[in-house]
Amino acid sequence: MVTDFLLFNKLAELNREMTPERLFHEKGVGAYGEFYLYMPFSDYTKADFLNNPEESTEVFVRFSRALGRRGSAETARDVRGMCTKFFTAGGDYDLMCQNMPVFFIKEAKKFPDLYDALRPQNGLSFDREKFWKFMSDNPEAFHLILWLFSNKGTIKSYRHMESFSVNTYIWRNQKNKIFYVRYQWMPLAGIQNIPSQEAEFLAGYDPDALTNDLYNAIEDGIYPEYELSVQIIPENAAKEFPFDIFDKTLTWPERACPHIKVGKLILNRLPSSFHDEVELCYFSPSHVVPGIEIPEDEMLALMCFSHDEEWRNRRR
Image 1 (spheres, one colour):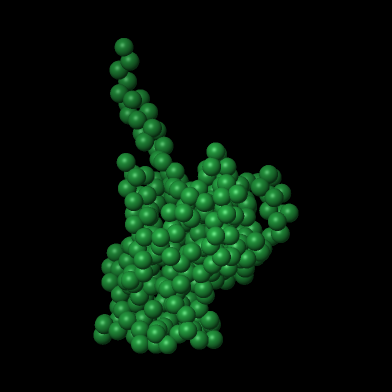
Image 2 (cartoon, rainbow, N blue to C red):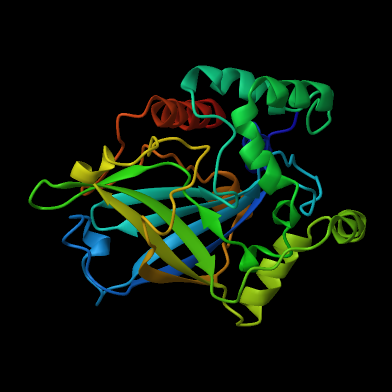
């Protein structure tokens, strides 16, 4: 009779590492870093990490492909995510962004149908007929489609990828004044994309090209740097805009809402355990801190529920 209980425990731990896959953004890579604030933003928010330029904030960033399953090629045409977790004195704050400035839909009731049109079918990335049927039935999605089928859909490196919050959030200051904000990350090394032919070649030659590029750069001391900027609309001015500021299929015009530089992010450390630190990391728009809030936006509320419920399912 086998009585090697240490062996039993090791096998049990291996079984528990087989975590259920995410519905989207399954294939990803992560790194740690520091966020350095340029100047205090106390006029706009009471969030502590946005008010003290003398102290840096530790962060963890996860880059991912929206439709990429485990083992898929990273350079395939897709939407990319950049989720940043700020470890602040007021708690963990999750800033979830993507490399497209807009989203597919703006109405919460269409969310389940979008999931159904995008989720894998029979081991494939998605059912193309179902995908294009959804897009034709929802013409507001074509703004994102135009971005996706440009060179922005085939990026060269996570180190050269810009990203946008898409969602609109609330900043609240100590005087209880409200401001609406959208975020943008800009790579300080410049934006670089690749043509579809090169993306297809790399998909076969080096399916993990983006992960290898990020890891090799950090190991060689070439630390990726990104600059965070925000667009701000005061609460009393929001009603004057000729469009819905919560509409995720539209961008805010820079002439009316210029970008304000907030700070710099430097990625300088790799995770020691991919499973514990990258595979099990959990991001949700619901993770906010005092001074940053979720507005009354049905779509964003549904996304909070979706991310939280997915984590409850994956951690079982």
